[in-house]
Length: 440
Image (cartoon, one colour):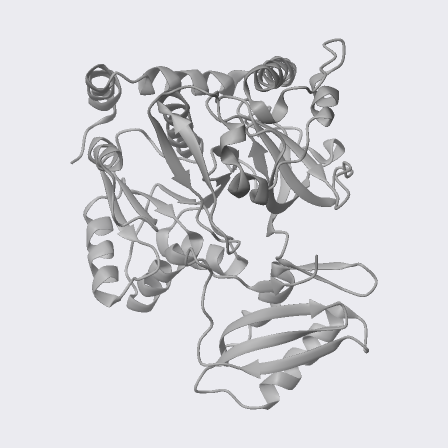
């Protein structure tokens, strides 16, 4: 179903809100309003909203009752009185984080990409808020409301609400991790029929489509490609841009209700500060300096049923130092220099240097004799490289890889072992995991 922009925004969505007794259109316009905010206005809004959220949580949520709040302090100081919330806390006692009211709520499950799934509950206003913001961030990445969407994901069984969303927004939904040649042929046929398609999904799945297009020498041009929920490696980016004739824009969020960042006019990512307060902390929960790697700890600012205060996502991020901000940028939101991924997605060397996923993909993308690889670290003395070999593989390839790795590790005592395997499985969610670390 394809609906043009005017009909969708002015008639279909308002009518849907009336029938479903929702506020999607109102919330979509609310989130759009922040695009023109000045840097000072954004800071003031976040300060006010964060303080309001902390007071609300202290008053109504059992986990936070008893916390003393000094209203004379800034919100970023007040929040330090609240404990860090972990995924284990979320799994062990979610009831202590919910408002004590009898109401209809939806359970939203995480993908389980860290190995263990969690869930949060949202009432209707909280759910509509996050859904409308998701669409708006797609807009900021190049999507135009009313244009058709081809989306790859991990929820082939669509709920009634998702089916309605797919119908209204013209979404053609395909499974991200079971793409065969017939699927790829159908996808390309659909994209070729309408160049207005926006392609949205996991970069790993978008790369599979891109490789097929390149292999078949299909001439295809799209308006926008948006990556979410997965790491965008350099070779994915190159393939996607070559195949679809446009730049891929990354977004960063989590299924627990956070829409954290998006790319627009810069290679850096904008932090959507009206919806989330972000802390970047070290392993002792102290703030790190801008430009340094730290753990992502987030507080959602727009929900009331289950406020998540100082939630540790399990990801790593680097904030761009203010002095490095480009003089001309489209929006005044803070800038994220790099989203590294899960905190298990790093190799820690004996001198405490950290190697991220791209340290390894930058080597293996030029080793065609190895089809797939995974780095496993159990201690700081070395790593094991699991690999799936290609038909052209010879033992000399491992020597080449070891030499290249030693150049970035710069420690002859650091052991590099190799293990040939027939298959490398993804995580529970189906996403690829390049580094598997057992170091806490």
